[in-house]
Image 1 (cartoon, rainbow, N blue to C red):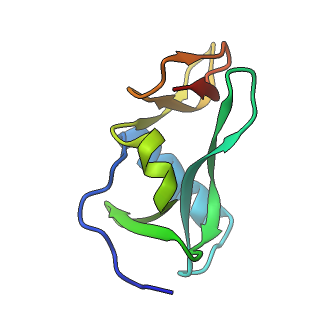
Image 2 (cartoon, rainbow, N blue to C red):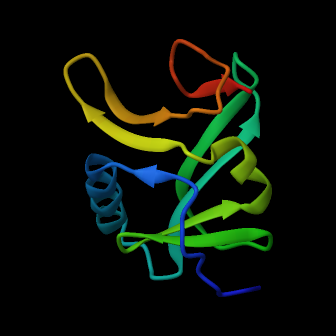
Length: 116
């Protein structure tokens, strides 16, 4: 398994998202081998779901450093996620991570499913 860290991440995290990710990592007391996994999987009402969670690096992953946050993404998922911005909202109407994906041709009402 490669330990190389790519220089330019294909996705970005807003300040709010970075703050929330760091807070969650601290609360869960994750070791240094863990990072944030971003990806896609089949399913959802629009065809594909976003994957966002804490995980260890796996074979086939690229690793990025976004302001001190280790980010893992399978090489094949970059096609669907390049240019995407992950935000965190904590308003009265919505609370949680929001995916702003320029590659999505349509999304579902909940914002966690998309098609390309």
